[in-house]
Image 1 (cartoon, helix red, strand yellow):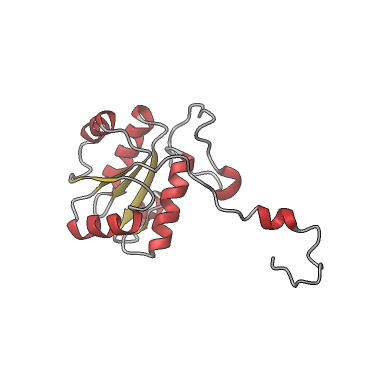
Image 2: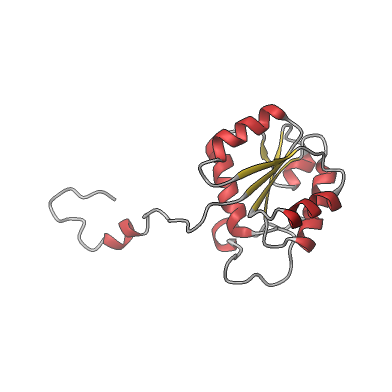
Length: 167
């Protein structure tokens, strides 16, 4: 809402205040798991102003290895490149639900397959603002497969985006 200067916007101050930007108290730690060098460069350019972006050059074939990397170097959000390995990505997400439930998960995929849609994967080379927004949502939501209680630091945004259950 914008003021016309004639006072006709009186009483609408709360609507304007609701649009105030959120100030993050600490940078988001983002761990990107992909073997694609070009995509790593793009992600760094798009997400580095949100916080620390680090990379694991690995396939998704070993969920235990990825979980151990996160134990050694915790992250707030894990970005998984599921291109050609959507089933393996699902196993990684399930493993992280057990070992790092507060870690948000965002999946990208080059092809819009049925399996990628089930993972709610973003297009790998899609809009940069969608990638940034996806990281923000994952940061707030935690792991979509985690069923236990989430503390006050991380709550699921069901009322904003709907439930994110993967069956």
